[in-house]
Length: 402
Ligand SMILES: Cc1ncc(COP(=O)(O)O)c(C=O)c1O
Image 1: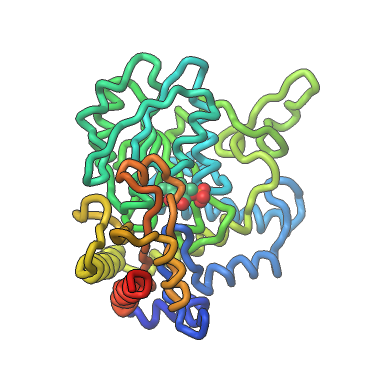
Image 2: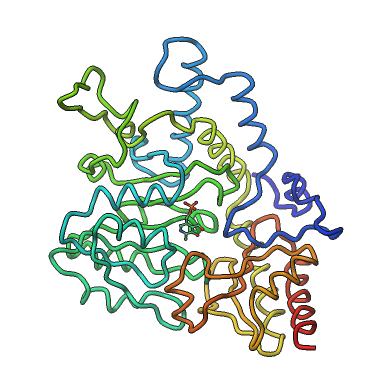
């Protein structure tokens, strides 16, 4: 196990050494995407330089090696999320695609789906497109879904409860086990959006008890364009595939009249897979596995505490959602100041945050605003950066309110 030394961690991420407008970069937009350690980039370069071939198709040596690397990446992911069976791990382009696969496959005409008010658009729109009637599980002022109201929303046409494991806006973490308990009592599937959840806590889908779980590589220090859908085997076996094409059909089973689909996981992986992305994701997981997860959690909690305490010293600043046991994500506003003004002034100081609706309009509007500033931390951020955030916001507010 590698000791958690922040300077050494930062040295793994070349981009952190760059300057923006002549200032050292302070990257606090990690909930949007994280930076990549050198070894992830090296693994991807290596496969292109030395192995590259399409997977699951040809007889030749390169194809066999590329296929072996791709399938080894599946094993790495399966172990990382505690999947019982490797074929339950489906590679997708990201969380969004994974949720679309589930929505398209699960929903029939007349079905309804319960989503929490804290969802990213990726866990709302796919259900609408699939034709489900959306029922909303409201959140309280702490930003957490009011689980006690779940049961009253369920009826015999409820196909799924779809909920985030960690809000990308508030960092709050719903009680997934509690939701699973109620949903399963009524035979309703639970779909978990793990886009932020995988990043800040050790995930074990088997223990979590959900039925489907989705996440993205790029939020987990891996490359863009690769993500994962995990589903319980018996459910995936009965889910119709969303996309048709090469590799998802059974050998010699395609005619103009009909086609038969391949076994899991291939029936959901139509077309040429992003095998390079999968290898990059596996490398990111191996990188993270070097550390004791408690060290990362402790470090991120400290950053959150510093940022929260320092921000709250600013007059008129409000942090949204409950503070307890949240991931290192803070969304805030300052009375009378537009968030995008704060974002722009911070940017000129080299500090990258995000402002706006964060692809979660219903959640942002729940708090009576149309935009929020969001700072989100990663394992490579420093205490000085958490302080710099608050100092930067204070400076911005002074400039704007002069
Ligand atoms: C909670 C949550 N769900 C889903 C998504 C969508 O992820 P992707 O764009 O990687 O598909 C995001 C991305 O911001 C997110 O934060």
